Amino acid sequence: MNKDTKIIELKNISKSFGGEPVLQNLSLEIHDKEFITLLGPSGCGKTTTLRIIGGFETPDEGDVCFMGEKINELPPYKRNVNTVFQRYALFPHLTVFENIAFGLRVAKMKEARIVKVVQRMIELVNLRGFEKRKIDTLSGGQQQRVAIARALVNNPRVLLLDEPLAALDLKLRKDMQKELKNIQRETGITFIYVTHDQEEALTMSDTIVVMANGKIQQIGSSTDIYNEPENAFVADFIGEANIINGTMVEDEKVRLLGVELDCVDKGFGKNTPVDVVIRPEDIEVVDPSQAKLVGVVEDVIFKGVHFEMSVRCHNCEWLIHSTVAQKVGEEIGMQIDPFNIHIMNKMFLAENNTIITEVYYSDKENNTTTFLLEGSEVTIPGVFYEEGTKIRIDLPPDALYIAGDGNGQLDEVYIESVIWKGEHNEIILESDERKWIMQSDIDEQVATYISLGFDFSKATVSEVA
Ligand code: ATP
Image 1 (cartoon, rainbow, N blue to C red):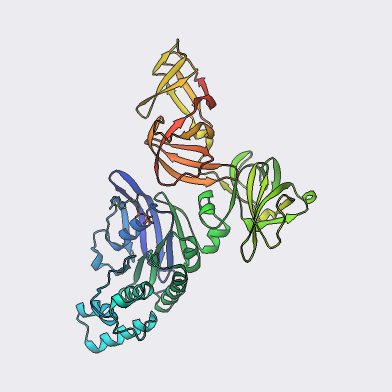
Image 2: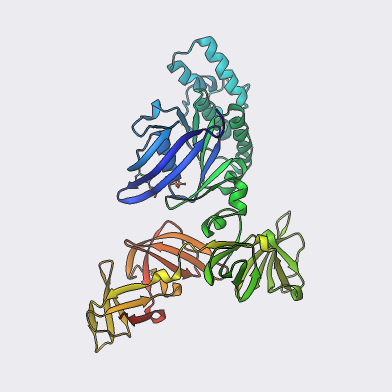
């Protein structure tokens, strides 16, 4: 068996709970001996994916295959897969040895063999000398090792680990990350690991699957995902990044904050709105006379290895990591190698905020026009069109706002992503029938529901011929 062998395949998996889609048409291949990590913010569907692989949930649509065979209907205990949960579910009254031996005893393995196998596991998870200890006398980290040994003792082809280190403190978590990686290498068991901690994912994984809102955003090695993020969400979620709105003028030329810079990307077309991603360590501080982008240092923090500087350039806040500290208030030039300017397609375009509809009702005296939006009446003040007229409403992202009092025009609108764009947050929202893009200075909480308001004084309303 080698790493090219597909051990598990998820094919077009969809899953909803109570009508809410949690996984949407998700496809994934997992290879033998791979350490693969599902990474994403809380609620993005990682655990559900893991539970589908383990057989604890069934997909509404799509197939789960093990070594090429469909196993959708196979119960968990018949799958060659074991799970380590966040809560260890150990037997508190049994010793370390007996906890690990439990599955082998159930399988009626001979005593001499049990002793041998359990001892090997105890060595593997570094618990020698703890064999006779009761579980409730162990630390969290030691209990987690017992849980891992107990899952490994059955020699599964695949081990599923759902945030197994979440309850441990930082130091212990880091030690356990290394140990888990070593255990995986030594045993050659395929590990499917779930975490929302990007550093943990980058440290341990052969392959990272970045997820958001029930969809895969990118699959790749740690370096692929860090160096070549496929969209602004991935760039924002993995490491730190300056993400700025830009325009691809033509191949290898991008305009941002009013200046044109050389880059290496092609194929975006001419004058196309894009997201420009620049990592803080890729900005070289030079004399202002030598750079197209010039900013003023607003804040400097020493981070041990580098200085983290906040620099204001054209109303935009930039993050720079540099080994040389500049003074607050100083003007600096920011130079970026074309190779380090990453261009990506926008996840959602402002033009998509357009509403095309018919006037439902209008009031000449009060100069208002009312239309129906997802079943609710919405009134535009200061605009009059006859009933039945077809109109187009263009809402720029700053015409949308979160109605804190709950009195917005659309309720139960889901916050899908929030990305800081140097000047403001760019927020993608989903209502019953469509998506919206909003600009906000407030750091809104992803995966929550809000009431969405429209400020029609910022909108353009016109008649559609
Ligand atoms: P976390 O890191 O917080 O565990 P996650 O990415 O693992 O998040 P899931 O546990 O897969 O996310 O949950 C995805 C969404 O599905 C969440 O909104 C969750 O509330 C919902 N969900 C999960 N299981 C169920 C269930 N059995 N019934 C109803 N909703 C569920």
